[in-house]
Image (cartoon, rainbow, N blue to C red; front, side):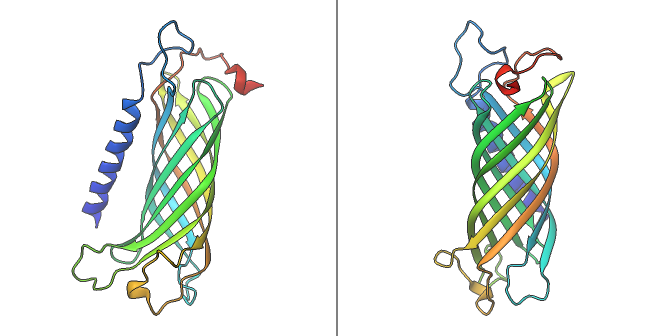
Length: 228
């Protein structure tokens, strides 16, 4: 399971980098005399997350579970606009063998700069949570996949390194409200269980963010639009 987790994370990180790098032009100030791409302020993040959620099974004696996972997320903005787009993917192994959560979120991104190296943000939008078994193992005769849809909100704070403003230390929290989709879920080995119709998921994360397009602000400069 650890080997598969490492391989999966490597592929996700590579995809994250390649997608954003392909849409990014050079590091330069806003409003330079040269051509500018439509989307040229892009963030990519890799996080360690603590995942806390109520139990999937209605009849379980354990009311919640807490696990450690990883989060990959990114945001795109048009120049210094305070509003953009955000995506997030969590991969969270559970205590059960080869069973894990895959959580996703696609949202509106909102940011607020206090100066050139400090920034807070909030992201709000639809979310999905998939609780599944690894069906590549021959020991699992009837794997399950439970799908939940809902909405999520994510908020956090990042602080760039003064000497390298493209890199930032990042921390935040996410909360999701989720409803069971019986039509596309596969109960499999959980056929005798009763999946909850509604569940929640909370996570806190810490990690690093790389800003592909870093405006050439001085330490005392402020983003005028976001400072209003």
